[in-house]
Structures are given as C-alpha cells and as structure tokens.
Amino acid sequence: AWRKNFLRVGRLVLIGGPDDGVITPWQSSFFGFYDANETVLEMEEQPVYLRDSFGLKTLLARGAIVRCPMAGIAHTAWHSNRTLYETCIEPWLS
Image 1: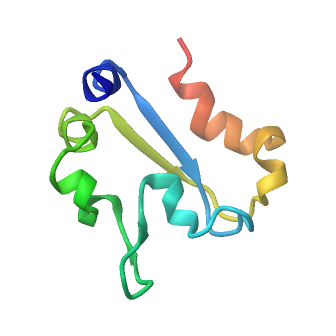
Image 2: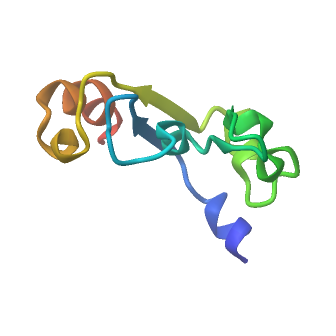
C-alpha cells in the first residue's frame, strides 16, 4: 500500500546541499546514504532503489524526480532563501 501511494506522486522535488550543516550525509536529501564503509552511495546505488522497494526507480524512470542541489545554504536558512525558492520551488507550483 505504501509503494502504491508513493507512486501517486506526480513530481518529487528534492532539495539539499553540502553546506546544510545538519543533514548527514547531505546527499540523504536525495536518498543517498552511507554504505558499510561509510562511503556515500547515491540514490541509484541504494538497495531500496535497485529493488524499487517503494517506487524511487519507477518515479525516476518516468521523469518525476527533480533534484535541486543548492550550495551555500545553512540548514536554518532553507525556508527563507529567496534564490532557493525561485530556483527549486516556484517553477513547480501550479
């Protein structure tokens, strides 16, 4: 049921950046995470993606995932950064 509902998402906009300072690793904003050796694996290398456990692979294949990396923005400033809003959020509002 969870996968079915997740696949109902029309567009998944993922926003994150290396200067967040709180989210660790920052790539987890894009479904990346550490492997057993603490090397960051991108989303496409994650077992949940490869198995399409909850639909990430399906969403990416249909072009429904947008990644918007933004450097130079601290965690506490994501909600108030005008450039981030204009670049990563506003284009997807209908």
